Amino acid sequence: MTQFVIACIDPSPYAEAVCDYAVWAAKQLQAPLTMLHAIDKAQHTQTPDLSGSIGLGSQEVLLQQLAELDEKHSKLALERGRLMLDAAKARAEQAGVASVDERLRHGSLVESLKATEDDTRLVVMGKRGLSSADAHGQLGLHVEQVIRSLQRPILLAQQHFKTPQRIMLAFDGSATAQKSLDMLAASPLCKGLPVHLVFAGMPEQAPALDEAAILLQQAGFETKTALVAGDPEEVLHQYQQEHHIDLLIMGAYGHSRIRQFIVGSTTTAMLSKAKCSLLILR
Figure (cartoon, rainbow, N blue to C red):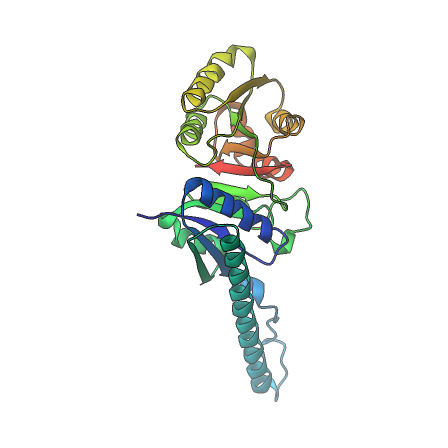
């Protein structure tokens, strides 16, 4: 079965970066690329529901006008979606991706991604969408829901694309972290890039870190290890910035101390504060 890199395209300032990260991923994975735009009627139709406020004698006419206005909004949303997908496809083809598909779907983004999950190898989406593009320090409306709903890796793009040169895997020694380690070692996505393997823990946990490093080295990765003490949410971000990490990789769910910031409201805090793009593994 052919599996695609799916780029979630919307009218936000993140769209170009999403497209460029998806192009990078498609080339690394040698996978076909699909540009996806989901039309959520609740977001694209701005006409308020005035049916309960219409006075006697004018209700039928006004309801008809409202229906016509909704239809116009729907047509405009469709046309805008097609134009965005065409532009994204042209950008990807210009960057050298030979196989680019377009999918324009009605419904929420989560519903649209779930419908194509079996054909998906990697989802690329912006850290925020149009409605929250300027809400710095926060996640987009659908990000956490997508992460929880899909059993596929998700690349969260920052607003500006930067070809990954250095990557960092947040590791805690758990079964979930080990699975993420195995996925990274086996995938061609980051082959050839130096890996910083960072463990937010205590010195007695160093053997687990060393074993993880050996696995990556055997897979051909140049690997640097670091055992850092402190709150994971703080020390991992600090390490990322100090070492100019371009892509932070972590599992969607963890255990021990990392579980505290991967599950629940602290998940949002960790993802929101990241200063680089993130690859979330499932």
